[in-house]
Amino acid sequence: MTTNTPLNQSEIAEVSARLKRPIVLIGLMGVGKSTVGRRLASMLKREFVDADEEIEKAAQRSIPEIFDEHGEGYFRDGERRVIARLIEEETGVIATGGGAFVDDETRALILERAIGVWIDCDIDTLVERTSRRNTRPLLRGGDPKTILTDLMNARREFYASAPIRVESQDGPHADTAHAIIKAIDEWL
Ligand code: S3P
Image (cartoon, rainbow, N blue to C red; front, top):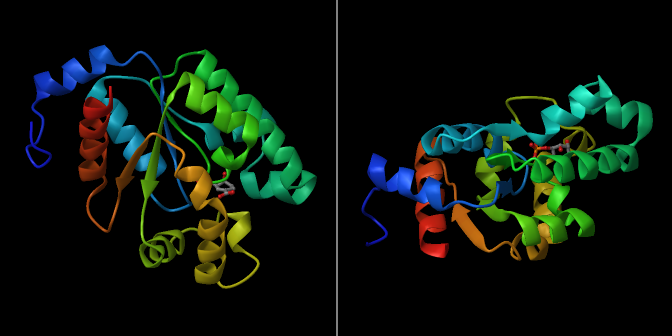
């Protein structure tokens, strides 16, 4: 199969049937992990869970509130526990927050028990996408482009240890979801 041929529905169902581990989406803020993840899960007919939403539910607070009231360390502890639980429950598709995969324990767990997919994207697109909502504490303290560039420089080596990397440029999220299924099909 060449990389440019789209998969049809029965080929997608066949990839889904071969999946024995959760798919965990990783990558910087704004790459579209939640939107792509929802689309991907529906194409594969699997459950989708957003880890950040689960952390908010467990804490009964929004992420900015968690950062403000308890600090980043507390958020990271909750994030580690939530992702471990979602993997344990064999959730089909899990979207993680941009810093989750930097945590040694979480990264080891994802690499061992899930299929880590790094959604990569150019910084200008991320700046544009993250400017639409003001819900990210890490972007509040300065120029978003500088912060995102610094985060990418610090995190790239971790993200790059995921077995699958897919690029999401400015195109529709459905294209990224499709590219992920194709990449997993080739990787499995
Ligand atoms: C973070 C990314 C956010 C959220 C938190 C911290 C990060 O998730 O987990 O604000 O460290 O990059 P998204 O990547 O979904 O925006």
